Image 1 (cartoon, one colour):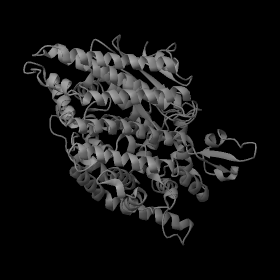
Image 2: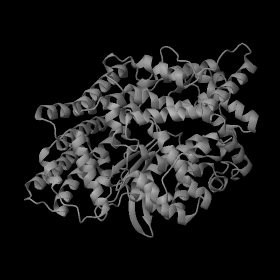
Image 3: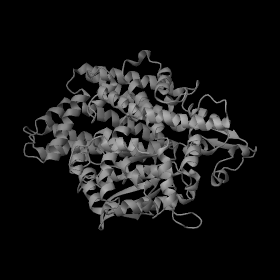
Image 4: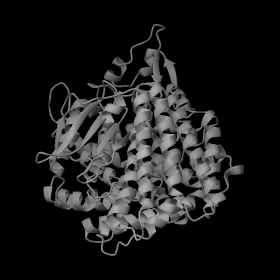
Length: 640
């Protein structure tokens, strides 16, 4: 059965397919270990790669089902499947027989991608603890199993905790008409506004009632409380114990070692460098917000976090003549989707063909095949709207890893946009392009020889760079004119409005960068020492007040719904690190043209298609013709 068919089947069928993939992996590993020495490259590495590929696909399927399936029974089954696969993956990573079999392979005559792959595999075995004594390896395995369960618990608590406030209709003053229309009063005359993204983001941006914004802001920062306070404490303790067993002083030291940045110290230095670079700009912008607030309330002593976005929009409107609501009529969701597909297809020489009869797990989901000159390259699914039990943000999920000549890659875009026909914020358009950048990286990098380097398998702190670079196309008037059309008149988005939008976006950049550095500092600091005496709420509050201009509000718990603490752990700095590289990569398109086919194909072949087959720095150098540097980022940060 295909991955799509398994996602529409029963929980029992799903679990059976999971067991089959696990048995396939065990069989391939047994064959590898039974091979006589000296083991040949083709047979030995193929056997291992088949095992890893089967487990990867099983885990990917389970992750999609756990995060996006409408059936609670299927989500529960997927969670169990994911635990089983992760347990077997840990078991294999600690198997000395596999390690010794792979270590004796002679790759001297192999291609560079194969040599790099095997080198990375052996490194990962050592980092997993394969060379430790039996007692240590047993404890490492147990800790990894526990961490999978705790991580799923942490994510589930966020996913399932949707909070709300009930308001009188006049308290929606300032919000767009289509937003208000889509949320009619309930039987009791109240309007319910939830913490789901389509409700939350516009409300904080436009609602004139400061008290209503504060209420929603507070409940948003109480999601998963108090359950995740305990789950987070256990997660940090187990990670620290695991790092200690493997010979590292902290989890942050362990998890940064195999990234581009190389060490926890370098990550801390990077956060400090970017924070310092944005300090003056942040302070200037905050003062502008405070001055704007004092025009309405002369006694105001500070700007509260729940007022900041509304005030930012007001300053942008007054300084640049730009009202964010003015562009919303040009971003109807179906047109935006068409735009994302048309722009990326033209840029990278692709065709997207709808597959209306594809099996899908919900009626909202649509499916497309990806082709190049008639050749099928892969498949993707769009799951764009919020529903109960679904992942709350936006992300690209792998459904199947591709492998040249053997398997086509498949991916799922999971988002939480307003329903079809609704109007998007420009920020949501940016999100769509961003996540589609991940999807293209997975699909175009899905034809490598080895499954273990297929798709987005570069160093983790590089994976955001291609998606962040694709955001740039959302700010170009010529690109936007192709799909951003008024939902009533059909008129294209005027170039002068795009220019004002770009100019207005410069205001708030320092605040945004420092906010990102606050998130990065939280993730790094939580994992930087023995957590047994760590008060995560107090540390989170101190870092907020050190890195942002907004006071900490008692009885709010941002860190308990900070989902990246589960997946990214200590390395949230990744987003800004990748942005530095993305700005440098984009320089080539800025010089040669955003829709320059030759530049796009060169980028595709140098950066996207190799997948994880080389160091990220080498991929970037192949495209730029030099080492990447900070100059483009610094120019961006200082602009405007």
